[in-house]
Image 1 (tube, rainbow, N blue to C red):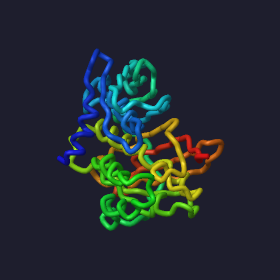
Image 2 (image 1 turned 60 degrees about the horizontal axis):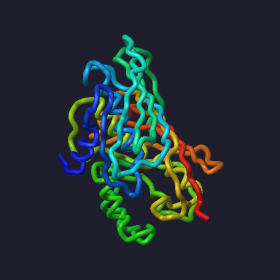
Image 3 (image 1 turned 45 degrees about the horizontal axis):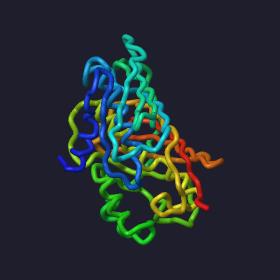
Image 4 (image 1 turned 90 degrees about the vertical axis):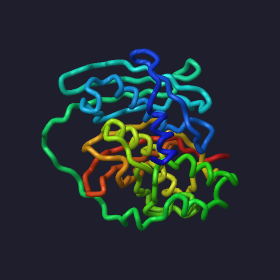
Length: 293
C-alpha cells in the first residue's frame, strides 16, 4: 500500500479513550490549520465505531456537519460521540470534535441497515476517462509561478499524495482572471488498495469531498483560490447523502457546480458517480469566500 495512503488510514484509526470518546491526530495541510475533510472523516469514523454490527452492520446514509473553529494541526482532536438512537433500521449519532477545550466541529450522522426499495437515478455526465487526464504530479508544477510561495506545489502534492485526483477541465489556479462556467469535474480514487470495510470507503469519500467543492465558485469569478492569494476562505457546513455502495479505491467522478455566491459565502453542490454510472453520493457545502482588501 502507498505510504501516504497508509498514513491517511492511520489517521482514521482513532484511539479509543473511553467507550464513546476517541482521540485523533492531524496530518500536514496546505494551509496552517487542520484540513476540514480530515475532521469530517475522523468524526464519521468515530460515529461508526459506536454503531453495532461492525462492517456488516448499518452504514452511514447521510451526514450533516458544521465547521465551528479552525483546527490546530499540532494538537490532538478529541471526538465525543452521543448515541442518539439505536433502532431496528436506523441508527443516529452526534459527534463533537474538541481542541483546547472548545468545540471546532459538529457532526450528525444517520446509519441504515441495507434494505430493498424503489430505484431510480439521474444520468451520469459524459467525460473523458481518468487515464487520459494529467496527474497532479504532471499538472501542478506547470502553475508554480501562480502560487503564493515556492513550496506550495510541494505542499499540495504532499497533502494529496494519498489520493489520485485528476481534473477533467482546467482548475481555478490555471485560469485565474478568466471567469468561467461555475462547474468543475474531477476523477479521484485512493492511491492504493483499501480493506473491504464499507464504512472506511465512506470516510475516504468524505475526506476527499472537502478538497475541491468550492472550485466552481472560484471559476465563476475568475479567482485562483487560497493558494494564489486572491481569496481567503474556509468551509462553513457540509452535508452528504450516500445513495449506493461504492469503493473509494476505484475511480469516482466528482461533478461539482455552484448555483450562488453572495455575502461572503459561496455554495457548492455535487454528485459523485462510480465509473460504471451509478449515482453514489450527493454533496452540498457552503463556505466563506472573501476577497482580501
